[in-house]
Picture 1 (tube, rainbow, N blue to C red):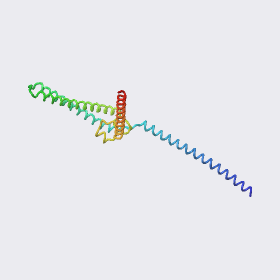
Picture 2 (picture 1 turned 180 degrees about the vertical axis):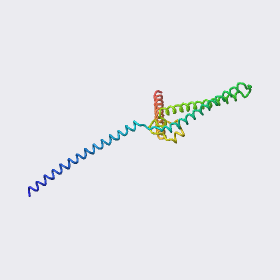
Picture 3 (picture 1 turned 90 degrees about the vertical axis):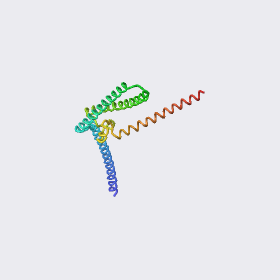
Picture 4 (picture 1 turned 135 degrees about the vertical axis):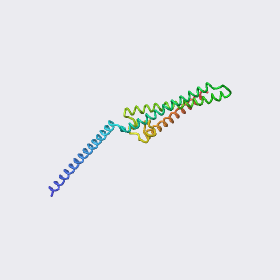
Length: 202
């Protein structure tokens, strides 16, 4: 009987040791699996980075034609505007002087300011169009410069010079607004500090 009890105790000890060994092996295996999964994920991320999003050749050609046409329309509009301004200037120079000169001059100044404002906006847009065409040549057109994902076609149709998707643009706006609020608060605090120093000096 004593021998049987001793044998059972020994068997139990062996079973416990075996269980512990098995548990260790399982834990080590699980750790290895997690590490391998992480490695696979990193490799996948590297592959994704190595192969960035790119618009199809057909879409690039479509938007290239669209941008070229918009550039043509803008250049024609600028040319017609310049001709109209030159014609108005000639009429003003050849017109008779009279009491209405001051009113005409004021109108001319307002028209000139409006024309210059439009010209500046058109000039900027022309630059944006040229930059978009350069991105098409590089094959980066239609890729958000923040998240590196393709910008939805609907957004590009509405704003073909867009460089960010809607989400990234909104995030950028939020950050800019937050930075502006922080800067305004800093300037206000600085003004308050200077005012308090002035009062203390009196």
